Length: 377
Ligand SMILES: NC(=O)c1ccc[n+]([C@@H]2O[C@H](COP(=O)([O-])OP(=O)(O)OC[C@H]3O[C@@H](n4cnc5c(N)ncnc54)[C@H](O)[C@@H]3O)[C@@H](O)[C@H]2O)c1
Ligand SMILES: [Zn+2]
Image 1: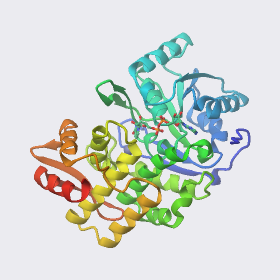
Image 2: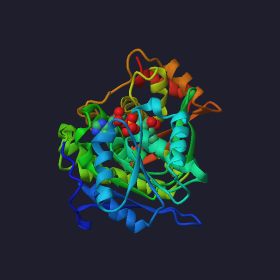
Image 3: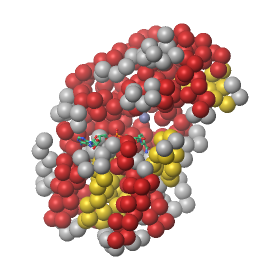
């Protein structure tokens, strides 16, 4: 991979999306998407303001791939930063890592006017964001997502947090970044399986809110998984735009933001029922397949669109159904445990057509019948 962090890019070469947050104090921010734009991070930082110190938070795998080069580039432009890293993977998304980071920040003299920059996948983003949310009652941070999933989903929207031994994301805070900088060039080193994870979320975005993005994905087909795909930048920008639009209207998930859970209600149940042998992307894809069938039954989704949606999921090598060893009872019990069933009703995000999400209540009885019919063997 060659990640040149020295040239300059023009404004026109990138897409500047915006999260508009309606609040007393303006916390709106830009989400930048463009190949090579990491080269310009110094300029974007200087536009925002000046800070007493700068901390790049990353994992040990991304450190030599992106973070060290970024640190060198910032230094060239007179921004000296400290580099803090921890072991890669979900097992690092915990309070011990956050405490360790906070202690390192104190030892290096960080204060309330310091800036953190999270450089990595969703794990780094969640940990760096949560550290920024609680360090000295909250300091500013920037997200530099380096996985496809993080660029289209986790880096946008200000949800931060860590896991507890009893469950994922059980400690957390809403803390919006000052800026998100998504450079598709950093994805060149990403393995194909990690790309698929990202595409599960991109298909979700297309199905709930962007028919044009859906057609683009259909036209590209399996070429999407190639690392140097030229259209990827447009796809990332469109999927990121969906998340920006939804978060701008519902920052704290009191209404519209729930549509981002398309495929996830059952997806989370599947992750749990498979004892996490399914990855998040695989579980969400299988959850979307069931949600698409439910959409045909309850939300009037036409046969042609059902077929197109299922075909796209299949072409990207994602699961097209619930694995045979998971039955409807274990899924219902996982939904119960996750508090998704209340008064015998489970609310599902469905689509009435490609690009149009609706929330639909389904009784446990109907759910079981339908899961037995289309979901599980
Ligand atoms: N905050 C939110 O709104 C939100 C939304 C969705 C998911 N998440 C969280 O995101 C996490 C999953 O994110 P993820 O899939 O990015 O996982 P991740 O951060 O663990 O990254 C996956 C692996 O890819 C490596 N990697 C990162 N960038 C790379 C690159 N450019 N080239 C090669 N390898 C690279 C990482 O070192 C890691 O080993 C989960 O913890 C999930 O809960 C958060
Ligand atoms: Zn997801």
